[in-house]
Amino acid sequence: MTTALTRDVPSLGDLPESDEPFHVETHGVDYISLGERWAKPSDVGWMWAGASVQVEYFIYGAILMSFGFTFWQALSIIVIGNLSYLLLGLSSLQGPQAGTTVFGTNRAAYGPNGSRGIAFFNWITQLGFEVEGIFLIVLAGAVLTEKAGFGVGDPTKIVFVIVAVAIQGVLPFLGHATMVKVLRWLAIPFLVIFAILLGFAVPHATTTAVAHGADWQTYMEGLAFTITLSGLGWTECGNDYSRYCRPNAKKSSIVGWVFVATAIPEILVMLLGAAVYTFVKGAGVTGSTFKALSQQSIIPSWFVVLFLVFAILQIFAINGLDLYSSGVTLQAMGVPVKRYVAVVIDCLIVLGFTIFAVLSTSFSSYLKDFVDVVIVWIAPWFGIYMVDWILRRFKYVPAQLQRTGRDSLYYRSGGFFWPAIVAQVVGMFAAISALSATFHLPTWLNEVTYATRDPHGYGADFSIYLGIGVAAIVYLVLAFSSVRKQAAEQERILAAGPLE
Image (cartoon, rainbow, N blue to C red; front, side):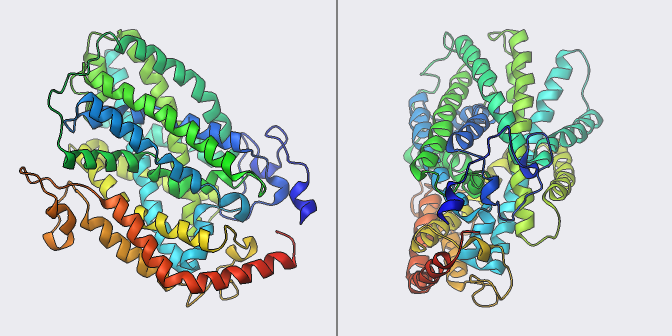
């Protein structure tokens, strides 16, 4: 084992054909052999930096101001909310040892069959974020077309969707190393673009655009919105990109690189969005942010065009991460297709949903509803996933994770580990009981929110904290003895032979 762990690591420029930049990656949810582990924590960090310096977070910062916060309230929410990227760092630590994706390792906690259901939730989540990205690309393209003097109707938007989905599929089709390289390239020029926008914004932004601010119930809702769309919302993807690191990669380096590369850029980009909101009317509405920028007179028109062009490029790259993860998640669900074929399947599905979104007049409310639904499943899952890993003493048996039949160590009862299923259901109930949803929930299902209502009828949102906490505690109580016993069996298996 020592020899395997200390052999030379290939560099990004000298990779095996399974993961070479601008070639189709042949790996999916399967195990990445030690000889193919080329990545360092800094590579993972730069990839996430490229994913964080992008226009979606600019829009989220503007949307946050539309909740009715003062600038200082929004500032505190953005800073606190982005501390959740520590969660992404923690959920990137399993891949280097397990050598597989998030929902490959998730088989240990839920059982191979139980994990398929949770993987389905993640697949739907990734598709939802992909639709949002393509929707924004179409909006940006429409604004650019109108600025060029051409009208944009529904048929034109549909053409934009088709072209955008086709382009979007290229990076995830090629795979992991390609996306790492491209996102690293895009990080620097987009930092420059945002720095220039900051220069235009500072003389006109004001901290007094909203005089009185929002109450504490709305503050908690804004915090939940920010946490979900930042660190927590990426936790189910972390190991998809860290699994090319070697097992002896320092855990502190992985967490540190991921956190610094995500939290700091996103805080700055969201604050820029909040600042622009204070002098650009309509910037806080998802469907009209780009149009609002094109119609204001403070920021020069030439820069708005440049900004939108770069925004489109960056959204294509960030959507590539979602599409890549949805592809390997589709494999983890048990669909017998190659990773790159799964990308094509997901592109076709996204095409249909995006056409509906573009033709709909209620997309902004759909986005808020979508965020609510994501919280309900992902918060309990994260609590269970982390507790299970800790109980296993931070180890899995890679070969056993690849087995989904009765011969797997993790098969349990019919492929299900029922303590995890029970904890997930209870955690989801706890999350929804404290969810300040945009859609109507009956009182019996939403007790915590109803108990914290303000005079206007709005309740506080504690869904993330209850979802994670309750699910983690229930799983710890129900699974402690069984998982610790299985952890001892893992140790015996790992001690008896090589890692792979």
